[in-house]
Image (cartoon, rainbow, N blue to C red; front, top):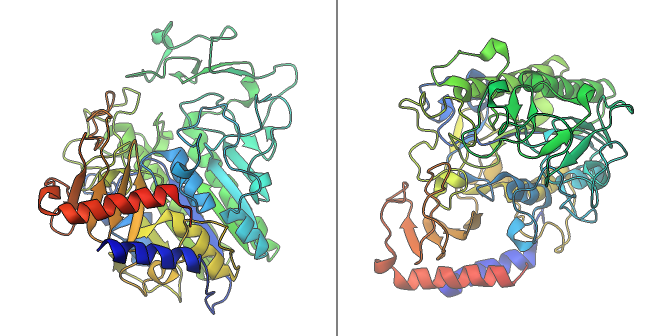
Amino acid sequence: MKAEIFGVLVVIALLGPAQRALAINQPNIVLIYADDLGYGDLSCYGATAVTTPHLDQLAAGGIRFTDAHSTAATCTPSRFAMLTGRYAWRQQGTGIAAGNAPLIIDTEATTMASIAREAGLKSSVIGKWHLGLGNGQIDWNQKIAPGPLELGFDECFLVPATGDRVPTVYVENHHVVGLVPEDPLVVSYGKPIGDDPTGAERPDLLKQKPSHGHDNTIHNGVSRIGYMSGGEAARWVDEDMADTLTTRANDFIRRKAAAKESFFLFFSLHDIHVPRMPHQRFVGKTTMGPRGDVILQADWCVGEVMQQLESVGVADNTLVIFTSDNGPVVDDGYHDESVSKLGNHDPAGGLRGGKYSAFEAGTRVPMIARWPGTIAAGEVSGALVSQVDFCADIASILGVTLTPSQCVDSQEQVAALIGKDATGRRSLVEQSGCLALRWENWKYIEPSQGAAFAKTTSIELGNHATAQLYDLDKDPGERTNVIGDNAKLAKDLAGTLKWMRQNTP
């Protein structure tokens, strides 16, 4: 078994990604990326407490995956690996980024955007970024660079980090939107600055109180992580964020279609990340409080983009991919009724763990792809697929040849993406506080000294002092550690994981 595993890895390393381009018309590509959306959070994946008609329709018109994975159980490393085709654990400094972190992707790196640019597509990233901006200490009142434009995107409109981190402003291309010189924006992740009240000092000012952390500068009745002063005219309104981002996404599609330019849109939703602040038209539309309501809001965003593609006449020549950056979390820092109103809803869809976890719910996420004429409608695939392969897949689809030194962990899996290969990858690495290796139906989790449960979320993290092995065909919920009956296999998988750590393909 060990020789077989190593043999497959060596073949992958020698071939490199994207060795064959499909003989198809070059499509537009729209990647819609949800945040913290669990495997069981959509009605097309079995949810009954919430209905997601637009995503259900997307799945009905394309292919829905049951074994698709983000590369990590948290957002920054997942986004890093997806955009670069390189596992984030290969590079230091790719953990959850602070709101004022510098850009963590090397501007010389190949990215999904630079691949699209080489193929002649115009590209934009709209929404949550959380991969750092600038080089060193950011002056938010000046040009902010490097960022997405230095990574191959032609334009961007960003939530710089997350909604629960300062600064609570949008960045368009290289500048904060709506900032006025007489009210400069200052940000600190150390000591408090300015006169803005904090959640710790003035809980009476809050319309959504923190459950843990998140008690620094208050904006829009919500206290955040970090301190901020000034920039009042530039600050966003959380309840309007989904509308603002969707309007920008649709404007990009409309402009590119009018100019008859092929395009790549990375539409990075903030939903369903905290603080969960749905627009008034979604408030109370589910029984699950704000978490359920923002699932509806995310579904609406997808519907609006699909309608825009149809209205400008490019829907049939557009590959749309919808997925999430990691698994679900319920209480992630605010008292938003996500626990008290959860009811019988299972965000993990029967899987074990969630966001932050080495168990399957940490990285197994919803994934839907639609491409009329190439992907058959109503398909369901159990192929093992990973977001780290999007770089190689897009390169192959667009006819761009990657060298072995580009997107080193990205394997071309277009046949699986379009439903022509029911197997997909044989192996992939899942990152949390430790690493896990999927090998076909087997799941090996390396020994780890971390906590068994997240202190603030009660999610099982999958850490254990000894190694774990699960047969996902027989035990998809990872309840029975079978390492005692499969010692040789576990040893082989441990050696493979060690080899992968020490060797870059």
